[in-house]
Image 1: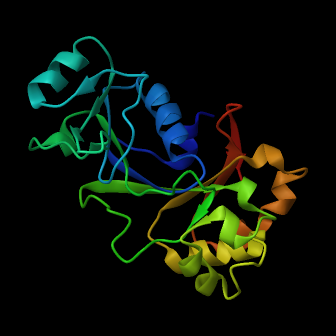
Image 2: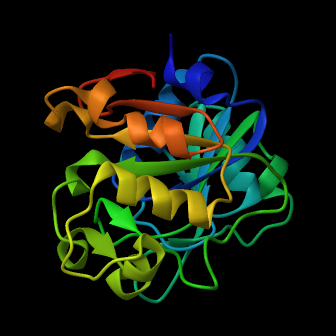
Length: 219
């Protein structure tokens, strides 16, 4: 089964939040969904411009992009050279599927959200959270973005190691998503057994796999 099916992606806008593989997930979903319609990739925060699809800064450029490719990235450049949300109206509805990265994690496999994030578009019909299994066994202070926020949610100190129980507890407390994708599961000897606390704790479906290896299954 393709990943978009496991995650329950539907036409419309999907927000992707979390850590440990958001950008890779967007690429996999965009490639799968491009066989079913047009796909717009964007952000509500800041991302590096993808090098694997055309880019559009205006509505006219977006139309031109879709004339040549089923996948187009749209956004506006900020002074740092990163992309932010498009500045033309209606972009949230400008493709059959709109995939939006809605927070940042500084390339770390775990994270806690500040009060102002994630920046979730009200038009979304699905929110996917990503967690990187490579965080497991590592100290919170090394593996989590905003460890000073992560540790209180985990009910421990920043030098404590992240266990599946801790990670699941933090995700459950933060909430705000419809389905969890646990990436980097190939680092685990027995992923299904190691990740069972996520299924036991979270009130939503959980999928695990390795985006780099192109494999995934339901937990």
